[in-house]
Amino acid sequence: MDIVVVRSGGVAGMTRRGAVDTTTLGDAASEWEHLVQRALPQIADLPGQVDQRTRDAFSWTVEIGEHRCETPDSALTGPLRELAERTLREGRRSR
Image (cartoon, rainbow, N blue to C red; front, side, top):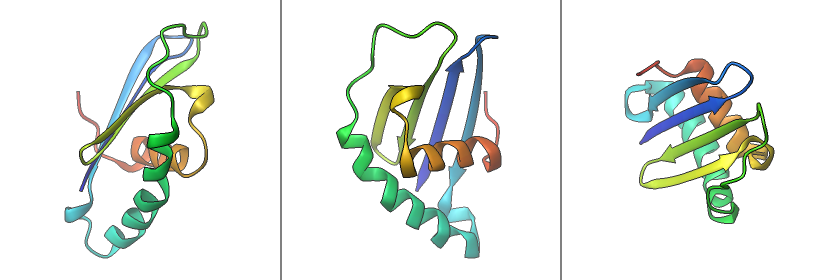
C-alpha cells in the first residue's frame, strides 16, 4: 500500500513530502498496516479542504492507497496525525 503525505505552509511556506510503500518494508510492514487501519476511518470524518487557512499554519494532504484527504493542521488528530508525521519522518523524500 502506498502512503503519501504532503505538508505545506507554516511560517516559511515550505512544502515537505514523504512516501512509504508498505509492500517493500518486510517485517515493519505489519506495524504500518496496523497504523493505516486505525487512521483510515478518520479520513471519512474530516471535512473537505478548507478554503480559509490560518496564517502561518500547516495544511496536509494525506493519501493512503486510493483514499485521500486535504485538511488544515488543526483537524489532523489521533492515528491520522501519527501516520502523517511518521511518513514525513521515516518515508522517502520525493519532490
